[in-house]
Image (cartoon, rainbow, N blue to C red; front, side, top):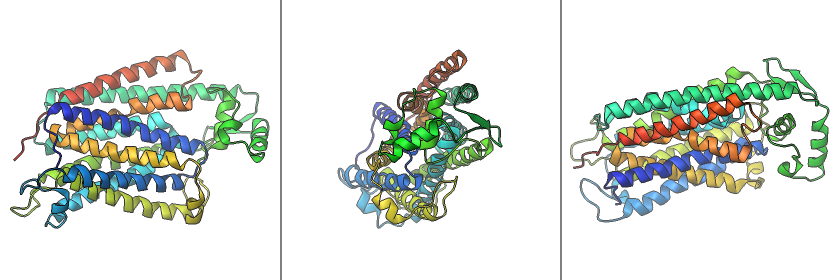
Length: 409
């Protein structure tokens, strides 16, 4: 079995996890903006997310000689370790529900603000729980300084969103294409103007991206985006989106402590002589639970959709190949990112591994590059954006500097 032996390797794994976990949300957001139903996307995502766990278990989990205190993956499958298995599966359950919720929250609240609020809750709740579960192996003075920096970055991120939303509302109010105020203070497009031109282009066979002629950051671009996307957000309640974000944040803050308990048995639930779950076995059970819950909920959402998304069917999903490769890639990146996070956390401490919750730094980068977020925004928005990114860099560096070395038996 492959074991992370040194702090440098653990930090390298955590950095890779940060990149992967910050990228897959952008891919799912891209597909939603192109009009693919979120139920179809999440099915594809779930398949490769599970595949990543199986590959890690069958390769890294089987390397080297199996030992009594640290058995290989197959050796653990027959051991009496069900209390730890249940902790791992509980972690998969809350992660699956959290990820499914964020998929809709990205549409309502936006990629950046969704990620920073969820990251804030994971840092405050999850990292604090992991610090005590890890028997304080991380340096508290550095760790909680990093937590404080992260919270400052979250406040700045919220300010960025508020400023950018005000900029967009001003663009829409000045648009000559015709807008009305929605029932919740949002902006609703008129049915005239650019909508008619866009519908005509799509009916004539133009792909969604090709049918877009407006420049990113303009009111016309925002109108065309609303017409293409699968989750319609104009005129929707802000509280609805924020409710999804906070619910997702609570779920996501609990999955890492659950994996910590599964691999280290701090509550002494295993019988004497039964070895702890190795990270690869725990990650396998975790991902199996995540897959079953995700697929089950999505089957329900196919026929009873939420957020105004159209109904679909399993047959329609099987025939929907548009953008499938990106959904499959997103699941692979998420699975590998979670695996690398747990492997690094096993050596350096799960509290330090929670530095991946600075993933809004990566997601914001992709939001700017892929979606043209913050284009043609005000100087105030740009200033807040730069400050947020700088604070995220300080936060992740501080959290990773707190890494300790877990004692092994």
